Image (cartoon, rainbow, N blue to C red; front, side):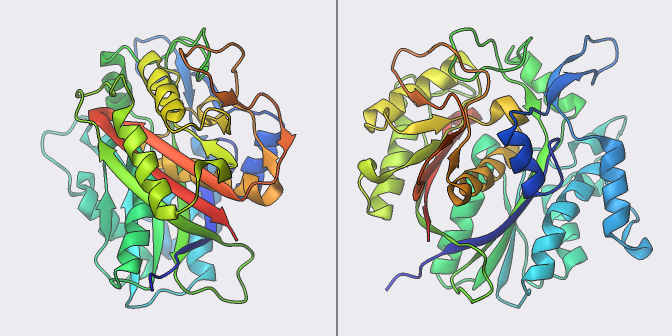
Length: 380
């Protein structure tokens, strides 16, 4: 009999707060972390969602003693803060996995450098974080563009089911840097306004930054305040284009279909979809087509990008956490800034806070290179 896999704890560090409750309260009030920021000299400010560096430093120095505070980058401090509460509540054994999801890691270390610093390698970043908390197994890095956060949950689930580990800590994060901004600018993808996923008047993404962490296990105990079963997962690459998704939504459609098949529940049972929703024409349109092909067009759906921006490797994990919090609070959060449908096929986009019984969640993600991922969660 296949092991059942559960998410039983989580935490996040974002511009809206340094724990889940702060984030949830901000979301209920419709607050957004997206604001004008000047990132690159000699360039105009643009909309992005950035963590206040002074507040980050203050929180880091409050949470760690003097011997633990040295030689950490800004991103590493985000990671450590997000994971610390989970490590304090759950033990680490010889059979505990440590999984890091990130797209760029310490890419900022490359600035003004002629040689590659050791910290820029993702394997070294993962090992540094793992060593800090005393993990005993070799860290696993998941870096597959913007589906990384969702895929990291799937990797943990599948490796525990295969008997490789008993439990896992999954951590995801990325920060805004000149490199990231320049990359998205080269695609002319950054919006001139606050992003509007699925809206007729959208004009591009807002970059965001965050760190998030979840604890995943096959063994429940009496102390768990909640649990969500990971019923199914899938990741499919549509092999369409280096940056553009399949126009027919093939990869996302196949990912959802496979995840639903493994979950062994009909589409009619899905109560809520946490979608990717980047507010770019090609992504939003592709998602609308894929959801309609799966006959999910009437399921309440939101994108969190209007609150957090696009947090790259953190987005999938962060949005999964907010989805689970929605289920626990029996409340659907609106897709911020959506007013008028801007896709060729309709979707049931949430427009205001509303009560709802949420048991089954579909979380999806899509990214550069044609990657797509989906997981199905059940509130237990």
